[in-house]
Image 1 (cartoon, rainbow, N blue to C red):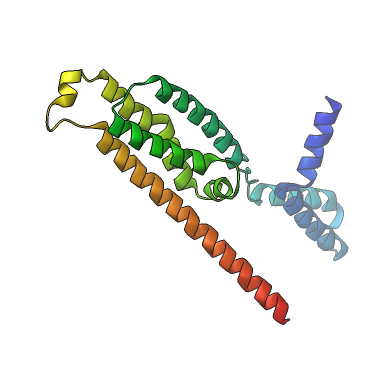
Image 2 (cartoon, rainbow, N blue to C red):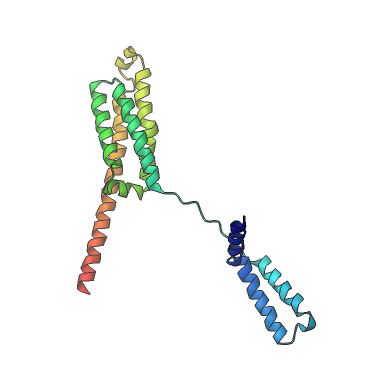
Amino acid sequence: MATSRATGALRYLESRKNLAGSACGVAGLALTLAGVAGAYWPVVVAGLYGAGALIAPPERTAPPPFDPREELGVLREDFGRLRGYVAEVEVPSGAGDALAELLELYGALLEPGWVADALVTDPEAVHAVSRAVRQDVPESVDAYNRTRWWSRMAPGGESPERQLGLLREEARRVTAGLHEVEARRQQTHTTYLEERGRS
């Protein structure tokens, strides 16, 4: 209890309200020394301190710290569950090949290393991979499984190959974007080393 009070008192001493009030209180002391406040100098100093504390801007609340690496760890666990689900599902060879390639791409993106480090810096890419792993791929495979076999064979039906192909293109775009980010980082580092070598 005493520790929390001490922490609260310390927090107030460092607050904007106390700093602004103290500055106004010092101005009140200056007025007292100049002979303006007279016998009521304690009231003047306290009043100016209170006025300064009232007009001070409120404290800003710091945003909560989020670690994108933790999100990637959770996403890796979800990807492991997706692989387990896909291993139990029976899909035709064409869709199976597309699905295997897609899962290989996601596995490479989520594997610890420079790719995952680059992925963490791009929230949109993390969102795209997260949505695909947690929603798009499972829904595509599940929709195929729920379709009756004779409907699958009907011409013009929505094939899982098409959906998985679209997801594969999105994963390739994410991968290409990460390669560009890494290439820019390498170029910046090379330029830095060249400039350091010249000086």
